[in-house]
Amino acid sequence: MSSTSKFVSEFCDIIDSYGGRDKVMKALCYSAKLVAGYHAKRNPDLAKRYATASSKISGARATLRLIDDIPMIQYALEYGLGENEPDRVMAVLGVTANIVDLLYYPIEKVCWLAEHKIVDVKNADRWDNVNSIFWVLSVYLNLMRTMRNFSLNQEKLSCNPKLSDIDATVLAKHRLELVSIARISLDFVHAVSTLPGGYLWGGKLTTFQVGAIGTLSAGLGIYQIFAKRRLNK
Image 1 (cartoon, rainbow, N blue to C red):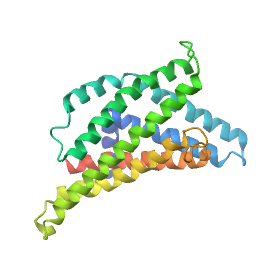
Image 2 (cartoon, rainbow, N blue to C red; image 1 turned 135 degrees about the vertical axis):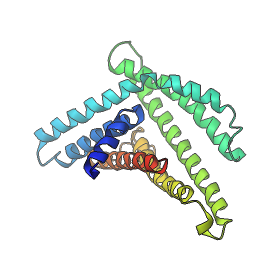
Image 3 (spheres, helix red, strand yellow; image 1 turned 45 degrees about the horizontal axis):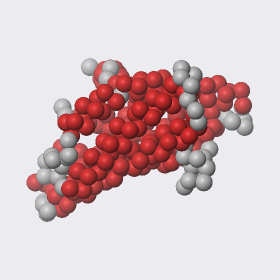
């Protein structure tokens, strides 16, 4: 099998899963927003077309997330109080993140219903602001967990002076966590930008900047999927 055929086969396997398909949809969404931002003043008509494409893809992703709370509930129940975590800090972060996510999904549903005028929601803008706050909290806690886990693994590796004695797969997975930290950091910058003006850098990023951040985050996510598949072979 040629390298091209192998890549296409792997790509098809990735988009066959919900997580992989969402990453690809995210890349398309934000790359379209990136183009829209770039052409905002150069070619407004072209920018409008790409902005529409970005909005439609974003809407499709939001619609697919409507049932995400079901697996989230299952995950939270299985996670419990984080008994299997390496330390108490990880457990506290994990439980807190699960609580935030369990609240975040219903709020996002209310915003979706209001956006599509399926139900009348008073103060829809407030719901959008609350939705942004919970998104920021969710991403922030995920970032703290990833950084904490990376730190704990780094300490374990530092206790072994001979890197040659460490399994290559373990090292590769540890280094891959750095990519996770970079990706989630980008998501955090993006999430904060959706907050109301006056809160940190809320509302201060341009369409081009949001598109660039989202595209880079999606690209790192897709890279991680390919890398993890190869590590698990």
